[in-house]
Image 1: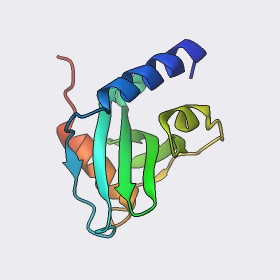
Image 2: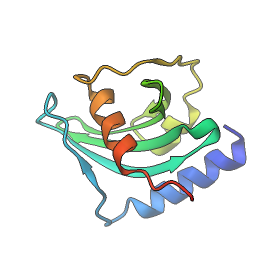
Image 3: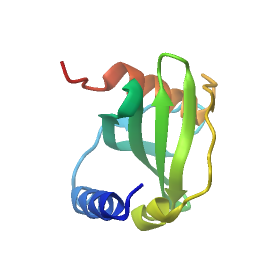
Image 4: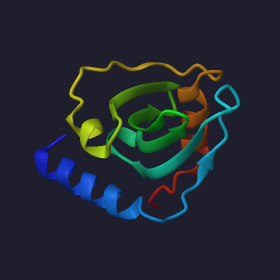
Length: 119
């Protein structure tokens, strides 16, 4: 992710995360946590990008994922305990098949059903 985009995303999520209500994803296999959708947008090649915030007993975790709904694939783009940590996570994550019973599977299902696609 280009540095400017990462900084803009970080600033945008930090500002929007203060006192705002976000859509919540139901994740039955993690009932002690809440998953808020902070961003969900279409990106290159028809894929989706989603940023979620998990709030649980140990605090917050932010995860950025890329989802290919047509092929049933998902990959992490970054994760961390803050948006800045998430943006600095530059590991080379690979696409994997979506497991409908995994946390990423529930998030992918939500994303594929709820994204607003440009006409």
